[in-house]
Length: 454
Picture 1 (cartoon, one colour):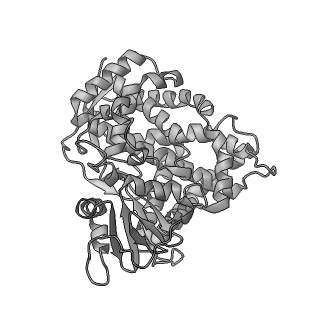
Picture 2 (cartoon, rainbow, N blue to C red):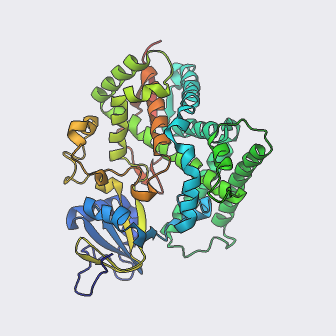
Picture 3 (cartoon, helix red, strand yellow):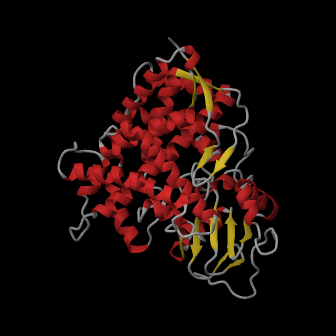
């Protein structure tokens, strides 16, 4: 590591206002604040949020330095404390040797051959959703597609992770997760100044939501321990995984990993699918090309694991949607020791932001970056592009462990839905972005279903 020295300048950036810096702009519209900063100041932009120094990094060499070359000098930022209140010490929030052990124990459960057996469940539950939609009267075929995708991906997570149909728990769990994630987001925005143990109404609602989530997770773990659950799901694999010394995860460790996988497995995938359907509605030529592929590959049947390599355009559509609307729109690290990035000084304790939403629109790496063009992911157009220019799942040692799971799930759902329905926006040409912990559409996504065939 090359430590920062005194002659080095700090990165440029907006001055903000006295005392608060750019805090209020970040509360108002973080996407615009970061995007404008990158346009105006380049690949490193320094912000001040009250007493905290915050540096946005948007250059591929600098990102590679942080995530790979000097990754030992960077840990998750203090803003992950809000998520830790919900997820505990799961893979997303834990650090150091504990994280490495958990990752080592969990990795085999996500091997591609393990995922093969989960494709059937994903397709069957997607068929259930399609059948329910098909049974709706014509007057009832305008739905909140974001809510529908959340419902479907939650069932898929329940079946593949727990081997359980959680449809009966979906409403209570969905509400509890919404409360918990809203609390985690607010805790970040308030700079962790309000302790979660104070008996305030918001804190009380959060504690109740966490108890609801814990009750479900511990109940299912207990069912598995007593042998009342079928084998072969991801939870069973996590429970049976042993480290080199023969040790296994404790119930608390299992709880934290399950909570992490539930959040990552349904929230982010639902958002990715929702934004994909939105873009397809705005670009009918792309939708027609997608429909041609899924009709040719699937016909009238469900998608299978063996179909995945043949759904090439489907995958490119998803990749391009996640470029424009990455569910994990921003992630952060904190410098443990002083460093130098791109010729600028990075003091110890500086929060580093890597924002895929900004990075994926950087014209240095993307031609016509605001256009929806799935074919930009054709090999001949992408082989020369740095892998660090496209980070929907992060990169480096902490790249998302469920990347292959999420892509298979999204491809199955999108292919099967597109083979049966064309979705059109319902009087909603402009959808407002809601950049919280994940990138959601504010107030949902109303769309009208039109059957492709009867």
